[in-house]
Length: 76
Image (tube, rainbow, N blue to C red):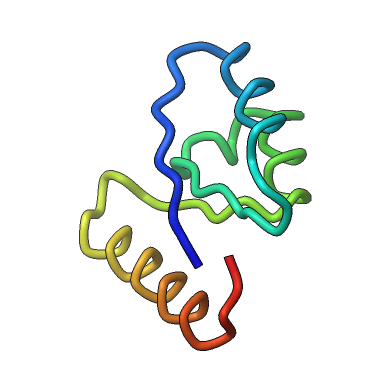
């Protein structure tokens, strides 16, 4: 298992990131994207894990649980 961190600045960067991401890779995105209409639906349906950056404790809990799942099931 591994974690890849990307800080994209424009929507075009997302298309490049999708091309270079390995199989079975699940992105983590800010929760605000979930409320962006069609983009939010597409992200939710594709299995993106959303974190609430406004509540640091909640974001840490989500990322910690994701890391534990990755280690326990040996998946990325």
